[in-house]
Image (tube, rainbow, N blue to C red; front, side, top):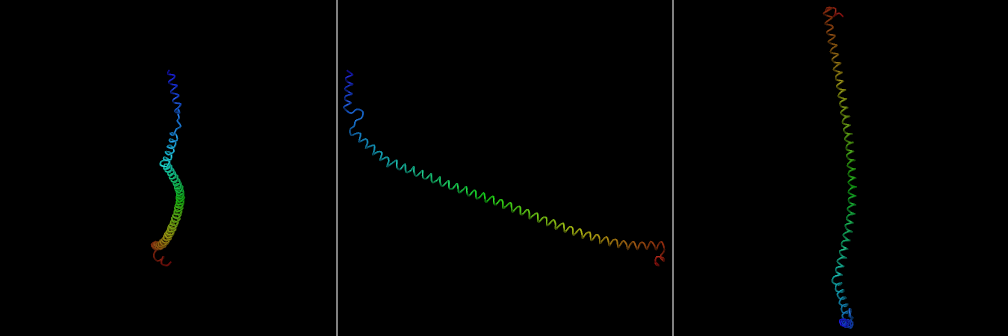
Length: 163
């Protein structure tokens, strides 16, 4: 008997449409789904998509600007490095020129001092020679005077005055 009851229940279910009933509910559910999809698209998906797109554009633009700024910064750094190297070369040249000029000036001053010393040495030698000549002349007079005195004392004053 239980078998008959289950057969009757299956027949009842088969009359009602079974698992899927194709009555007015299915088209109504499809219309509700489409309305919900359109409503979500208009209120949520499009604004969200626009926000995502604008954010992507903003990020892309910022990346491009950052890359441009980086390239400009690198170019400026290269220019500054070149200017710095040029300034260093110029400073080294100026220092070398100043050293050369200082050495030249020092050599000129040393040469002038040496010439002055040579002149003073020559003048001193000349003065010494003059003083020597004067001393010899004075000594000759004294030698002559002393020799006459010695001769006078030895020979007498009369003989020396005759000669």
